[in-house]
Length: 366
Image (tube, rainbow, N blue to C red; front, side, top):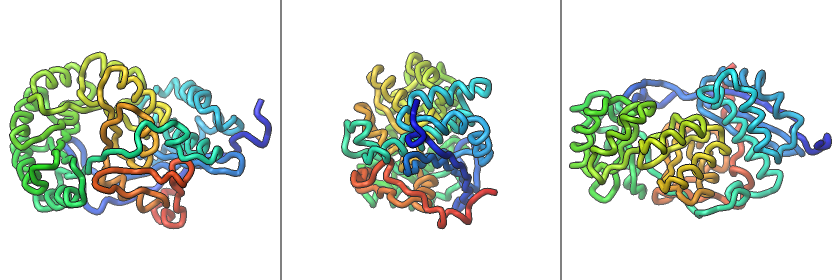
């Protein structure tokens, strides 16, 4: 049994809602704010932080359902803590908001463990890579052509070799928007598109052939990611230069396994704020490696920087505009992309992040 001095002594939660700087939309959803749910765990005089992007009600669920399985336990035994949380959410299901709650806690546990050991998380996990390739991600369907070109072209000017835009509201308008995006980034930057499941399979294939004429090389969620047969069908019929990507809504290892067994994607995505935290993210990455496919992280770039470097088959990560904006507002230690790449600060332990409570206070949800 752990002694009273080497156990987790507290777990705190809070939620912060930040308005977007303009109305945003993708192929299926529209929003005007983003909420971060923060978890802080403490042990041995050290505090670890983790988070997810979800409804503020998650703070109550974490306190009521998960805290009791974490406080009083050894902070180094993350596999056991992770399993205890999954057992605790059995009746809620290992998906959706329950899994996002467990994800936020797991992320905080990894940060805590690395800080206790005074190691950057990339070194604790063991680094396979020294830097992470990124794609600039935004280009919302609510943007005017001028704003779309300004954002994507701005990333290209800063050295990003890959940028992604949202599509899916209007198929014909999407073709024109893709052409405008290509004009703004030039011929040497790879252009990705993300439909967020807005198309049906036949429309997606037709669109892919039009997009290929503009050099699009990545088609994310052309249909809903629940339609694994549809994703496979699309993969078989799009131009060879286009990679089909999905997985951001994967919450557990069984889903990722089904996606890979179905041969539904060319690139598997996972999100540590949803899929069981860094523990689940690494599991998904290893599973993807077994299928000899490239792996990508979805959103929350500051959170994913260290764990993605531990994966041999990591390919590229999403520098999502909304989350990068919030992470720069709320944390000290956020690394800035250089020529479209992320490099961790190995002089800082854990995730390398410290939460700025005072700066975030005005966004706190009561």
